[in-house]
Amino acid sequence: MRTTKRTAQTAGLAVAAGLAMAAGVATLSGGTAAAQTSVPRAGATVTTTPTLAPAFTLCSRGSYPSYAVFPKRGNLKTATAQPGTCINQSLKGEQHEQVVLYGKRTDGSSFKIASDTFDTAEGQRVNTLNTPDDNDWETF
Image (cartoon, rainbow, N blue to C red; front, side, top):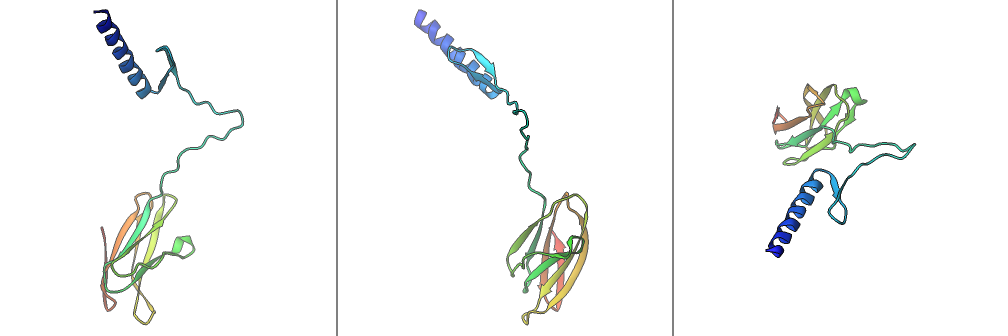
């Protein structure tokens, strides 16, 4: 009986220790618990884990490569998405963003598909569609 009681007590301590660990409490040897705290040193800089900025995604679903330009960002140009591929552009800041979509012909010349405005806090996903002579776009 005594062995059963001791085993039950040990199991109870293990369960309590597991719950304490899950709650952010460290278990010290002997079964006692101490709260874990993280206090920055004097003069230390507290940092947070950065979150990813919403992205602008451009997919070329037509027969031509496409890219985007952001006029409010000094005409920042994305990489060119080849037919059947997508590119991502990280955008920082929460503002209404203007984007101009372009396609490229086989001779290398560019043509304007459309322009749009979106909220950078939410990001935007765009498909360019069809052919250079019958181009179109959509969000997804």
